[in-house]
Image 1 (cartoon, helix red, strand yellow):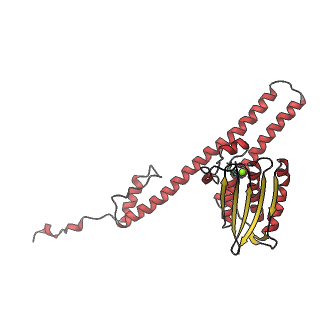
Image 2 (cartoon, helix red, strand yellow):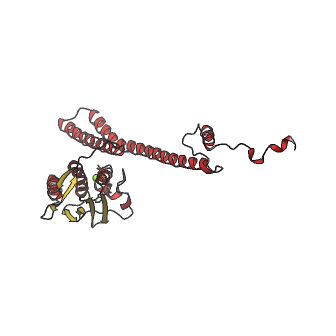
Image 3 (cartoon, helix red, strand yellow):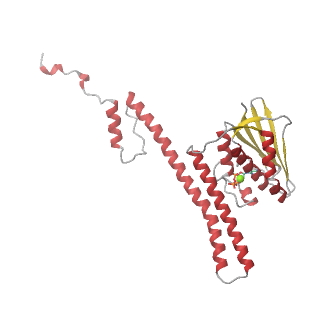
Length: 288
Ligand SMILES: Nc1ncnc2c1ncn2[C@@H]1O[C@H](COP(=O)(O)OP(=O)(O)OP(=O)(O)O)[C@@H](O)[C@H]1O
Ligand SMILES: [Mg+2]
């Protein structure tokens, strides 16, 4: 027997999975978000690579979303800042009567209010996303709650000649909610209903309850939302063309805040709408 026959064929050393992954990570070091080439791998090495790739995909898509968000924010800031700058530049060009200064300052203030609201909404969404908004739940009678919140918005509705009222069952419907946040939900929905309706239109806030769920509906007879736009209304910065024509001051954040708050209550929010006939938003909340 010669000495060479002792080497068995499978003795070619196989790289263990950890070393394989380590080698691939070092090789792709310059491109930290690039997937690890998993095609030629087997067994545990393949599984580790695939799991890492799933994580990398998630990070890459979060980063893409973040970039889009920054682009959208910059775009939203540009219009009010341009208007603000134009207004102030024009009024400062020459001496003017006091009345004209007053008017310009009033216009500038509107834009400043718009920017303030925009920054508050953005801050809220950013905090919500990073889990820094804590809700404090309390046992609340939803019937009283909707009547009280609706009352706050009666003057705004009356200004536009819109008939607004709340309808609740006689018996109390109790739920655990964060009343301040839920007030923000109802405010945003009512503000939309008031904006996207015409004088003489009607808005109703209606509460109903099933054994395990309460539903708050905000029903308006306003301009409606085209079917093609309905899937997008809860997305940040989305505004339909007819909404832009009806009211230019919005930024498309109200409903994303509504959805965030409702989901933080383990509820859901739905929209039904017919163009020129009206829109209904339904907020469904679990009862305990
Ligand atoms: N009651 C409604 N009737 C018709 N369209 C609506 C109604 N509510 C929402 N929409 C549509 O959904 C879009 C998004 O609403 P959202 O409240 O998020 O933003 P916005 O009202 O445009 O601005 P913001 O609330 O940030 O001031 C609106 O621009 C409009 O196109
Ligand atoms: Mg809105």
